[in-house]
Image (cartoon, rainbow, N blue to C red; front, top):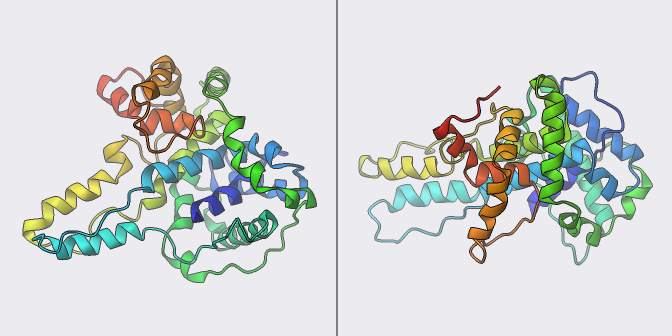
Length: 318
């Protein structure tokens, strides 16, 4: 449930004012946009419809799409037991263990909101030097073990929070899925491609661009798992290489933190009819049905349409 903490930290940020000091798609652009809502947003629903809320939706689904795998304990008689046990434990504990936790039965959302505001502000204070850099290359680190993780728990933030946001109920959070649809996302992306297709940099500031950027950033939450933590024994090396390739989005989904959101949007729009029919082929087989949450990235990237396009070379990247 720690992932939901980060989701909420990012989702609370409508586009009340353009973050003009930073380019669209940058860490600073997203941060400034999210910061505005703490003082101005009147409801979670309105925040969710914003640029930052759309980014957060994509981020959540990106994290879940790339980081849900949990490996079982290897068999004691496996010749590669030591290598597997070490790497399985590393993969299963891929996230920072000091992120805030919560209990929905005993705690009100107000306490959670304060916790995530503190977390987001502390991360921003430690990373002001990267505010002009791509959000897809950096935001995933908020979930990873490392320097930021070691600095937790977060200290109380000075950010102003609109009292209206503190009245959010758990039902408001868990009903977000009902507020989105595949068709609405398709129409939004088509409109944004038409408006910004000749300006890839500006597309990153669109609603469709925000959702895709969020998904790409979420996929990078496990980017520190780029290979075995130490050299495997020779007999087990191939197995360990295959394992790490299987959790690398560049290998399995044909995208990286450098993939342009306009490219993904064009593949989504071009394949929309097929994409909408695709989940029906898996009806009853999916363990998790996200509805339309993060659908532009989830349906296009996770379902394999980017790899399909890479093979067919139908749409060129910007």
